[in-house]
Image 1 (cartoon, one colour):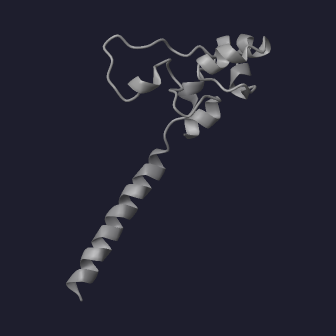
Image 2 (cartoon, one colour):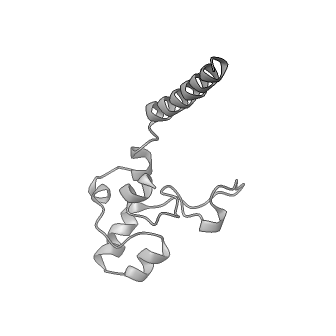
Length: 104
């Protein structure tokens, strides 16, 4: 969801490639075309909302498009520290619950 907001795409679209919504999460031997964000600039400037919508792109000016030689999907990575913290917290809460059960 965070990637969809940052990249100005619909929430059910991949920020990296043009994969049909119903195929998200499936493995593909052939792969799909990479999203060319620089092409969206021209389509946005032409106000071709139909093409943007068909590509899963919102009709907004994305500031990431204006940075030369930037591939937006590679810019933002998952927050590994946040994921580790959630895992440690969940494990700690399970441990506390087991400890409390033993001492009841």
